[in-house]
Length: 438
Image (cartoon, rainbow, N blue to C red; front, side, top):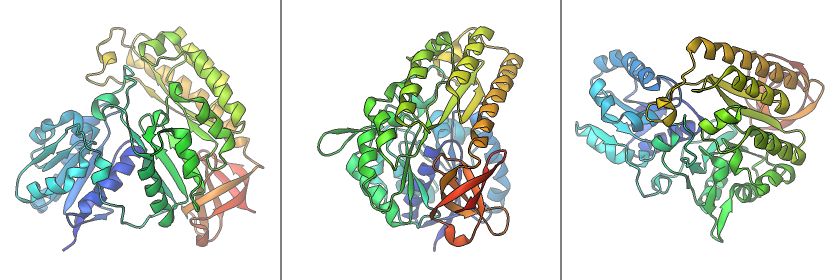
């Protein structure tokens, strides 16, 4: 009999991709994914360790499933992802109803782990194996639910930013073979996908085996652009130090590479950037953006910022505001610094008081919101191409993404789903655009 699997995903797009692959791996054990935990035979939490108190939030979530477990003692519960990697046996000690804990590099072993769980044993695997987990995963078999898909091409990070846990939970940088990635991309297109986002903790550091030597990300993008039926390519997330000349040029000469770039800078103060171990200055970032925009003038730029980093002064924060004003961001994500156990920054003196960090965050977000609003308002009257993904909230409404990753909704029929159509923007709203089909 088919068993029901409920997967809850936290964090980044890479976790979304990993959840999909884990569901496929568990399909070999007879599991079929469902949309709600009630009535499931197994619940799997795919966790993220980036934000503050991530582990405590997972324990709280597990507590919500206790009534389901009490009602069905045969219910299996697993924890995967970066919190699983960081906490390991502690998860099972604190929450005995958990049957399985698996790290982000070993989920290809899930079918074998489930055999142990079915025997009534606990299963734990948080290794950093030598084998390529992707080579041991089953071929994707489920039909796509929409016209967009994620594809992990690179994992791990060697940058060791002093605030970040990724090198410790995901390991060193590893790039997947290009030929295998092209095969997966063709398979996705055969199943109705028209836009693929290439993923990696540091995706523009990609250096995979292409069969005729090592390929960089730009070469991989250009080869994927040759796939018939694949209309759009994106990539995220990137490090400024890995934006090489070829990748910059690809933004100008590869029509299928969308004019959207997420390139975190984190701060505008050289003192803070050095303390973060970013290995670039604010001016180097500004100059880099100028070069990219010279290649693609209509580029929509997105970034990440951390305020209240240990040792950050008000003058340092003002440098960040100046960088934002100089560069101009269409979208940005900003956060207060939160200490991650085991990272160098967690042990530093000069922790910024919470109220000061909150005040800085509010001021930064006000500026970023102003820039986002100006960017969206400037779209009114322009013609964009929209890949429609699903019905909107209102009857007779369809929603999709423009080439700039803006959410756009129009009045239109359901047959638009999966289609790319020209749209004229007629209104800018808080987090979306309203358009009219042309």
